Amino acid sequence: MLLHVFFSLALTASPLTLYIPPVRSLNLFVETIEDMKRGSRVWTNRIFSHLREAWPWVMSFVLFSTR
Image (cartoon, rainbow, N blue to C red; front, side, top):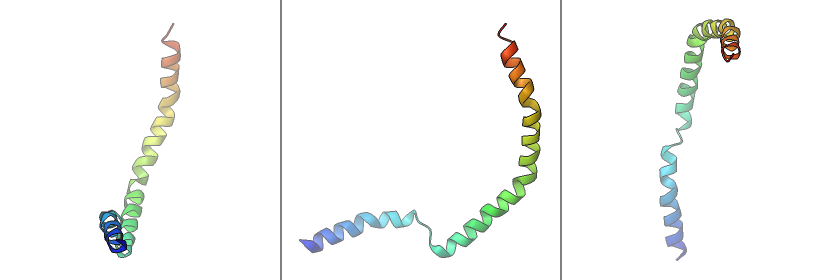
């Protein structure tokens, strides 16, 4: 009986290990994410600066167009 419970628990938990990457893969994953972040920094800064400039115009249009 106890052996059946052990195997049923072990076999139900085994698919969960497919979602967790091995530790040796995490370094490559983290390095790839850091490279993507570093590469998109210039684009992100440019977009946010345009959004900061456009936000007052959008808000004034929304607030004053209801009259």
